[in-house]
Image (cartoon, rainbow, N blue to C red; front, side, top):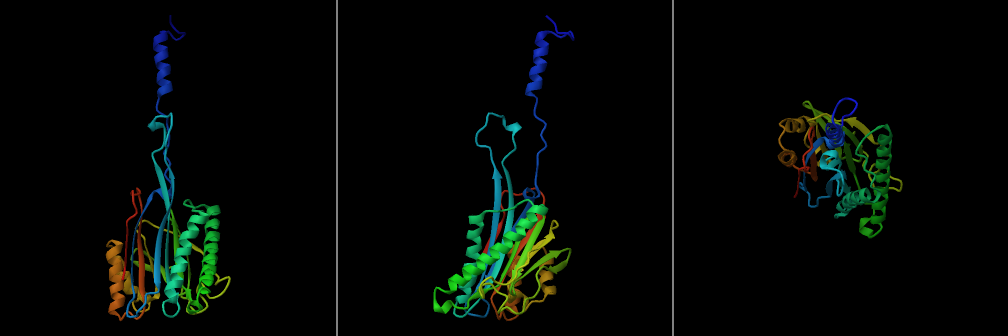
Length: 299
């Protein structure tokens, strides 16, 4: 028996089965957050003073999709998919006899726990999520300020403790940054060191923990380019090492770990009159690596 087009039933059935089993035409999606690679390193040194009141923190915040069970064949489904955002923070505590170290410790611990509690990790940036990221950053600063104030009431020796706080949040090629006090953030691009944060000389009032409600914090936003370098540091570096010398170190493009060491050594060779903390990240656009490489040291 033949079909209307002259094919045998066997031939027609075979062609239909070929249609049913044909591989699906699927365009694989790759978001910007799944296509960046960040190498991070940090180093902190107490300098010529007895107590190190600086602290630093780098977080990777992710979203994952992985098929656990299915009746579909693997070619019909996406491979394990991961996309990440990154948060990096430095804090320089203010307060006598170690109270400053307590303040910066409370600040970073609070941020890390709030990130889990509220879990609004926007890893894809749009005009809508950009506004949400700003609101979330302002909220986190307020909550951190109140946590420091509460902690200062635990003992009379902690009264008046406060901290600077400089933070960046990276989602795809978007970088959001904010700061309070005299710690700083820089972007190194094409040989130029660009200050993301301005000076806040009046650190007595412009610090977290000094008053309920805290200082006004503005969240700014810039676009990253592949091969940008992001530097966060406390004033123990910038008070004694000028921006030209910092740029000279970053221009050599070593791994962040030896560059952190070099920056701290420059501050120490200039007398190191204050604690020195640097946190440095290399940013690249391209196939994401399985792990973000992180090397942290403290002295």
